[in-house]
Amino acid sequence: MPQWRVFADDSALTVKAAQTHAASDGEILKVLEPVRIATGESDTGTVAGLDWVQVRNRLEQFRHLENDWDGQGSPPPDEDVIGGAIRLADSLAALDYPAPQAVVVGVNGTIYLEWNTADVYQEIEVTSGCAAECRRVDKRTRTVSSYQLRWC
Amino acid sequence: MKHEFDPVTDDEWLLRRVHRQYFRNDPNLLISPNAFEPRVKGREPDVDGISLFRLACLPSHEAILAHIAEDKRKDYGVVRVSVRLVVDLGLTVVAKPIPQLPGHIVIAELNANAYRANKSQFIVMKLRLAEEASRPENILVYPKSLGP
Image (cartoon, rainbow over all chains, first blue to last red):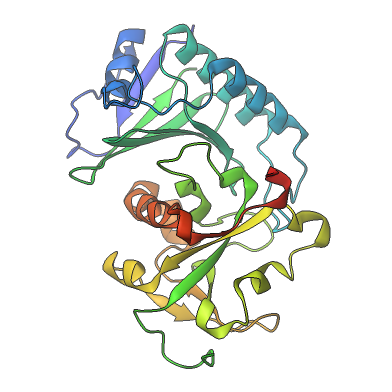
């Protein structure tokens, strides 16, 4: 289990979870907590989509993407990014965090995990083997929170 | 049909090609906000903004798939977003003609340099565009490779 470090990159953020020291697993859950708001779609407040096994399988499939996978010149995620995404997914699964509804490759070689509820849209963009950027939109206020996550 | 040099009006629709990667299994958000992510790497970075096409300048919405490589075409769908939404988001539609197809435009603010500098400032825009594109009536073509 990685030691989490969570950094807010905007001092005006509404959630005061910024940490400059190694954060505990509980703290990473606190940062990500809003996707658990019950909204009636399901017990976890997220629309049923993927489970963590499916997420992991999908991440593994990204290893087969070739350069120009979309016909528009996009690079595939490199092994470092895929490994980081798998490590993140395994950690969140172990923490019983709801699985994202979608896992997509970005056009810039990063990987996105996406959650969507009635109240919140949240994405974690894995940018390397050790780091990700979490961005969350409160749909009611359109407030954006963003964090840097590091685990090695 | 409008000429591509005619002014863009608020009542027009803009078409975006969307790879099957960005079709979500979520009825509340069928299109990923990351379908509107500017390209900062690769062969053709979105230095002037992300690409869309004016439906009013095209014979049909399918036309924008015609110059995708044939082996990749089955992986693409087509969605539409309104010029009105783009303008309401404070974004600018700029004509950028290309030889392959009439009506090519870019959304100037959604460009590679600005996105690289601060991704967070674009997430609400990407989400709003995805929400509109996700309405069933705005998904004009599903990728054939997704199946029925």
